[in-house]
Image 1 (tube, rainbow, N blue to C red):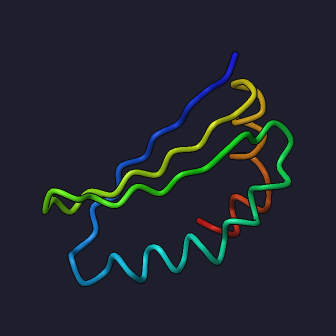
Image 2 (image 1 turned 90 degrees about the vertical axis):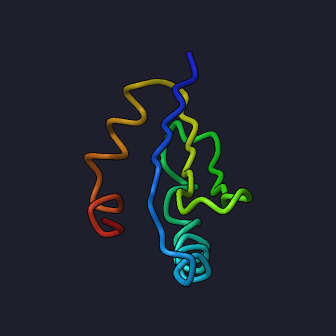
Length: 76
């Protein structure tokens, strides 16, 4: 069963562009992870300061393997 992970990140208004740039630069790091199915970075459009990071995984085991990987540790 597909697993979806959603992280909410509070970003000051002046930091949104930098956040998008950083995620764009790292996008390829997760693409090759076994079980990775997709990624979205959602920018708020209603004046709020909360961005959403959504990842989709084949199953819970694939997500947990990514979190335990050196590539994940490097990006966090």
